[in-house]
Image (cartoon, rainbow over all chains, first blue to last red; front, side, top):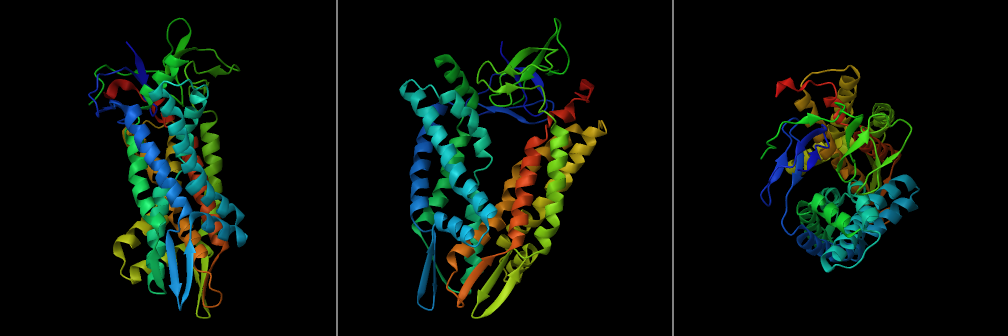
Length: 199
Length: 219
C-alpha cells in the first residue's frame, strides 16, 4: 500500500487505481491528486523536443512587421526586451526576459534533460536536481499570455499601419499547444519513481 | 474518479511520535518525527527541504499583498505608455487601453484584456486577503469554496501580464521617430510590480492552512 497526499489540503489517502488518462480527485477539497498517463516519458519527451525546435524558431525570426509610409520595422522577442532596456525600463525588461525567454527555455531544457536519459537509459546524475526546479520555473513561463499580448498589439496597430505577421508568430501559435500537451502528458509521480529507482 | 479510502489528516499525530509530511516538490508522503523543531529534514526522494507547512506563510503573504496593493494605485493612475503618431502624443493607462478596444468594437479581445488587466489583479488582491484573514480568524467557513478560490487565484494570476507584453511589443515595433513611436511609461513598472508581488503572494500562501482547523465530520 502506498500513501499519497493531497498537496492542497493535506488529506492522506491510499493510492487509488486510476485508468490511463484518468485523474484522481481529492475527496476532501476537490483538488487534483494526480493524472495517470501511459508512456508519459515517451510522449512528453517527444512533445518537449518539438517545443524546443519551435522555441528556437520563435526566437530567431520576427513575429510582427510594421509598415508605415514605406518604412518597415520588425520585432523579435529579443528586440522587445532590448527596446525596453533602451528606454530605461530595466525591471520591466528583465521581467519580460524572464517570462518569455529564460523560463520557457529552462523548462523545455529540464524536460528534455530529465526525460531523454530515462528513455534511453543513460546515466544522469543531475536529473533529480533539475526535475526539482521544473514546477518552480514553470510558474514564470508565460508564452501563452505573450501570444494574447501579440494579438492585442496587432489590433491596436491595425488602424495606424500595415501589420505583417512573421514566421515566429506561427511558431508561437504552435508552441503553446505543444508545450501544454507536454505538461498534460507528464505524470510527475512516474518520473520521480523512475529517477528514484535509478539512483 | 475519487479515492476510495477515507482521508486521514497529517496534522493528527501518529503513535510513536511520528507525523506525516508531504514534500512540496515531489509530493512524496513520508513519516517525520513530531518534534522536529530546529532540524532541517530532507526529502528521501528528491532532497528538497521538507516542512509540514510552508514556513511563515501568512506573514510572507501579507507582506507581498501589502506591497502589491501599494503598487496597484500608481499602476492604474500613471500611464503605462505614450503613443506618438504624426506629431501628437497620447498617454495610455491600463483602463484607457481597455476602453480603446471596446470603442473600436473588438469585443472578444476587449473582454480578455478587461479580465486580465482589471478583474484579475483585483480578484488576486481581494481573494488572497479573504483567504489570509479567514485562516487567521480560524474560520471554519466553507473550506471547499475557499480551496477553489485559491485554485482560481493561482491559475488566473499570470494572465495579468498581457498589458506588460503589449507595451513591450509596441515599444519594439513602433520606433519611427516623430512619425510613430511608443514610449514605456512609469505605470508599466508599477503594473509589472503588482503582477510579480501577487504571483509571489499566491505562491507563499499555503492552502493546507485552510484545512488545519476543519473537522472531518462533514464528509
